Length: 189
Image 1: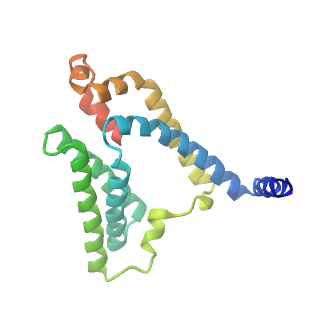
Image 2: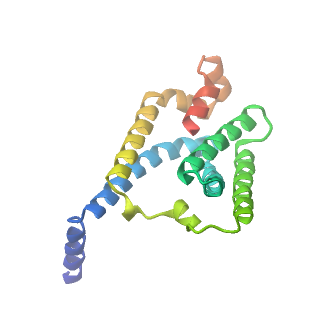
């Protein structure tokens, strides 16, 4: 019982620190948004899209560092292009979703390795951009996570029926007048 009291006191002590409050709140908001999105990703058979986009973001970060531009903006741009590429391959029946994700993952990651090789390495620790630390969330990051989480939850709340129709029967959704390509691309972005 005494050890439980010590653990409780330690957690309560941590709640007194701003960095821990930011991390906890940011984690809760991100978890809620990811849980809502994850349901539809599983039903769309795109469970690996997060991994695929993260690996293409690696290529974007390396490109940003190579060109001397903001690595996070470069990663965002490359990630958006990869989602558009995945959507295009799926829509044109070039490859099913899982294969399209794997193709973009391999392209993005290999591009990142090539960029690192061309640059001869970087002074900045490249992997800190990919993994970071939730304890490093500041007020600006928390605001960004909150805004993004709110947008995601509002989008899913507003288009819940259309998304459910889309993931269970895309052809039927198209016949019902749901803009399936636009909705699917917007959801993936």
